[in-house]
Image (cartoon, rainbow, N blue to C red; front, side, top):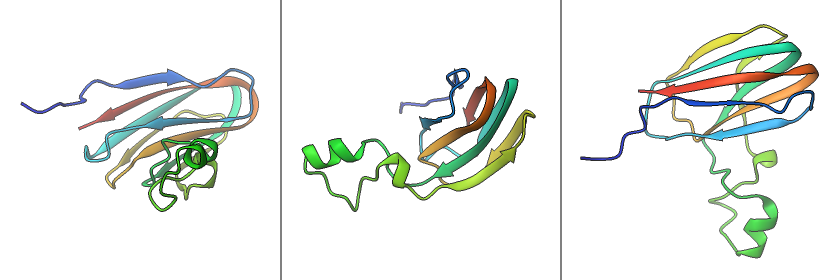
Length: 118
């Protein structure tokens, strides 16, 4: 039997901080559903990438990793899944995804997320 990640991935962004939260998922499991719930008054976006964002630029340089294979999360090519104000969102993604980014752009509060892969 192979490994299966059928449990949901859950978490919450840091409250009252304008920052990005990165969530790496199983790229081969599709479709993927991501649900985000806004807590407080917060503005955020949900994005996805197929690039390997596992290492930062500093780690890539220190370990002499192939820059064609690894990309710093801030430099990755991100595609929008949802652009929202302070509302909650539920989206299905049926394309390959290496990671999601919840980018909290303004406000006070946090975003609770749940990711479920088939």
